[in-house]
Image (cartoon, one colour):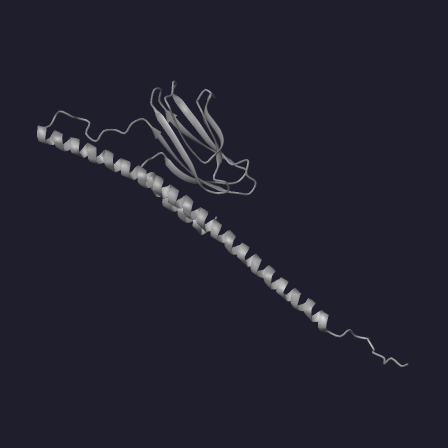
Length: 212
């Protein structure tokens, strides 16, 4: 794995400190990786994923219920989000597949959210009015900070994806320019030898005077 990909994985893996369901991983070519999550019945869940780098920035994704029912399935997706409410309790499986790729590795990010976040203050109404107002303000600040973190996460993903694309494009232009330079030099050298052959005297040619 290149240092560029290692750096991106290390950077985005820090996001898992904020949300336990976030993960950035490498998906090799011709491979399929699955993850499992225990979910209670009636708990709304959301799965969001995005391909950061590799090939055409696409993967196959499938979400399966404990009874084997396929809740979500799509092929060659760059980004998507799926929300559902389970009608049964059990272990749900979601898999990312890169089996259609023969040599390109992918860097995939996903965020799996189960249920709502627990409130900061569980015992509301048991404090004075001033403390209740403070709790309300704290809740508002906490919600705003979560929105900021979500925005920063998506911004970092877009920035990492754009940086990788720009670096790949720069490498392609660089090697294309080298090839063009080599071709021009080779063509120039060939033209020089062709022109020299026009003015050089052929060996073994003897000129004899014409007599009447």
